Every structure is written in structure tokens, then in C-alpha cells.
Length: 114
Image (tube, rainbow, N blue to C red):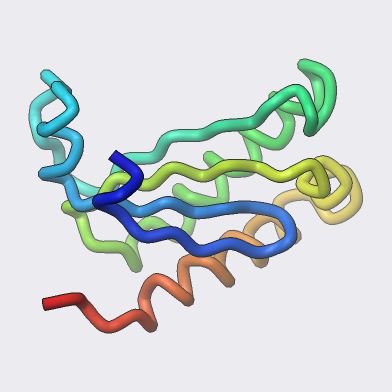
């Protein structure tokens, strides 16, 4: 699955992007919906349950605010790195949105592969 997609990373997150057809190859039975779909991976290295849930909540909210700039036929998986906890605690939604926006900007600036 990861071979079919692209990835971009920064200090806080790694963003994996897959074409929607890639999910069907793996065996997804969900109907193809409108808009991009989001998956999150926040390991115990980020922190305890409270810290992980904070990071996930902020990522979902930031993604919801910035999802309109993405193509609707993509699946995205965001992997949080351990410094994401400090970012979420220190800067909150604004910091997470900035870091995620940086990755989404890299994705938008990328030329489509033929």
C-alpha cells in the first residue's frame, strides 16, 4: 500500500497520500465518498492516552479546516512523531494547523506524476 503513495514529512508529522483506487486494492469495502479521507497514527511514543487523544483531536480539526484544498479522490494517513505532543500542548490548534498546512502545501505544489 505504501509503495503506491507519496509521503512528505516535517519535524512533527509524516503525511502519506494515496490515490483512492489504492484502498480498493487492499480490500476496502467502503463506498467511495466525497472528499479526501483521513487516517491517523499516533503511537505511545507520543505520550499517554490523554496526550495522544489531544494530538488526534487537533489533527482532525486542522484537517477539517484545510481539507477543501485537497483533491477528493485521495486517502491521507498522518503519522504523528513524538515532538507533536509538545507542539499540541504549546501552540494548540494554531501550531498543529501550521505544521499540517506545511505538508499539505508540499502536496499541492507537487506536479502530478504521469
